[in-house]
Amino acid sequence: MKNSTMSQKLNILRAGVLGANDGIVSVAGIVIGVAGATTHVGTIFIAGIAGLVAGALSMAGGEYVSVSTQKDTEEAVIVKEKMELANDYDGELEELADIYIEKGLSADLAKQVAAQLMEKDALAAHSEAELGLQLNDFANPWQAALSSLFFFFCWCDFAVTFNSTFAIRYSDWTDFCGGFDFACFDGVYQCLFRGGAEAKCDCTEYGCRNVDDACDV
Image 1 (cartoon, rainbow, N blue to C red):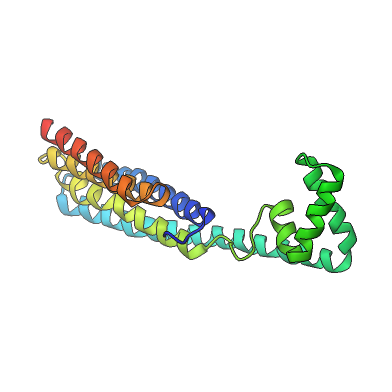
Image 2 (image 1 turned 135 degrees about the vertical axis):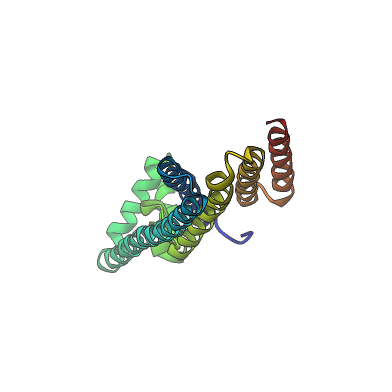
């Protein structure tokens, strides 16, 4: 993850947050609904597992399709920009200069900057300044799908195993496991954006607080 760009990290985190939140809400809803109709432990457990598997696959598939559409759109606008550069280079040069003028550069300096950037890599210069895209840094649908799948399972596993089955008899354990799950998620989030050392510290501290909360119940 150290070599990943910020856009790739954000893509992974966004999908993970969606998967985690959808998992805890949807599966909890299924478990509570089934528990309202029957107190049979096996039935409640199977319903939770079915919701977990179906929900995780659904979220992963949805993320893959969604991010694939985004990637296809990004690639399409890059191709369009490449055609415009081939057909009207001078016009694109003026357009790039105008972008930098709007950002605060003088007209002469903006033209010099635009000319030098386009001389080095015209497509990359226009992609970054005009489209806000970096070449070869498109959204990765597999990253989004796997992130959503993984975090869906992380947030659902203990909810299904403990909350749906033993919530009444072992509330202390369910509180503990719920806190542990969230601590793991928080640790991964910190690893993505702040680095490993601080992340381990934050995750450990948060986990200890949840252990205390569980013991006090």
